[in-house]
Image (cartoon, protein in one colour):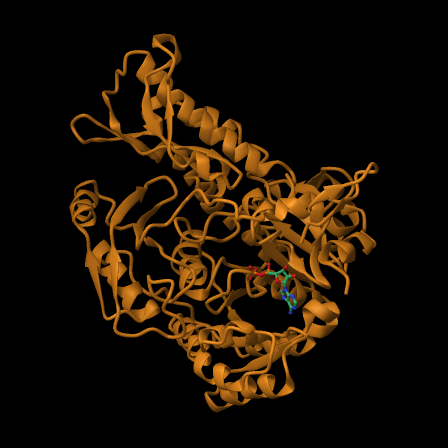
Length: 554
Ligand code: ADP
């Protein structure tokens, strides 16, 4: 069997200007980065202002196994399939981070015959957006320490600096560091830490910004520390929001690439789906909606994390309305939720137990008043009996379901799903409403998500979180949406609880104000914003030959 990278390298790519032309873009609307990648000018949004938006489909998933359940693969496959049916469909995806590429998961450009290409470039550096975000973030860090060194006029409390440094790499040794060592000329010694670039608030803000000026305002509003009286200090107090935004002038433009079947894809931004909202940029989604009939987008991790945030944060901030939600399920993950250890052998009993996880995610998505369909992402080890079990289960519950073979067959393998999605879109049953109103208290917003989406019986707030609840109120941030940072391995806050956990209490230890991105992060458990590499990192498999041909990326 061919690997993802082999399939990708055999593809015949079209010049990026040809892909742009498919979208009705002129050569002046894009700036090519080589032959197969381009940045799209933000003026395109103005140029197509009068054009009606196409329909928006969100692809999300059940609670995954660590390898991922194929959201990107199904997103790419579905867009290929809809194009095959004669409509213009664009996928809007997140940008990969080098952390997972060299860690456990590998790249994020789909898989099998449903991939985005050139996959090596997209997975490694791409058009430099993540580096630009890192530079903007670290400029701010450098200015904070320079301010301390130069007399600390803002009275920054050295123990309450919340701004970290960042790097786009899984590097556990940087989780806790001491900086400013070496004497007076080298800064003020203090403890600090690094986060992975995708966890930076700059990344979240870039993805939620609607223009360059909006991004500058968001960066200016970010809280980087508290002063000795407890007052929050913002980046605008350092007067560097303009400089940080200047570093992002190209990064804010969506990137254009293509699928294996030469259909257009926008890839832009990639915030973490736990301490941030886990979706590609609002600008890319809005552009895709203007330029195509059907935009297929995805949100990180399972539906309790990425989709909830897509629906309650991104859609609201971007004034975007989803028209259909696809929940990707795999037989192997459902068997895992049913307690099976061996996932490649037939086990309908485990499937029967584990399917409660799918049921809960579907019920959750229905709460947003948007049609929901299930896509069974077929692995070659899945048996007919297992597939039929899920289909019959969904039929009984009146949930539209399709078998999806896009990994094995590309767009052609997604025809059943594409037809089902188009049928749901045609039914005009969508009447999107978010889960909670913004004027609800932060405490109640958190309780609503935990009870309605996770299935918790209650929520406990730790001492620090309680204190922060009143601080948030005093500082007038109570109207922001909440972004719960929680394990992706369970619907609950305990990674060991599989399936559909019940009778559990979610504990919120800490709250953080992401005043620039515009949400309150509620930490349910210890979530690491700087992952580590596994014992045998994927980096050991990657190689390059004298012609620059890369192998081992997956
Ligand atoms: P997610 O977006 O949910 O994280 P991806 O689409 O990135 O998941 O897929 C994760 C990995 O699983 C990729 O390496 C991909 O090639 C592989 N994969 C996805 N679907 C299938 C499938 N049906 N059969 C075999 N491998 C698959």
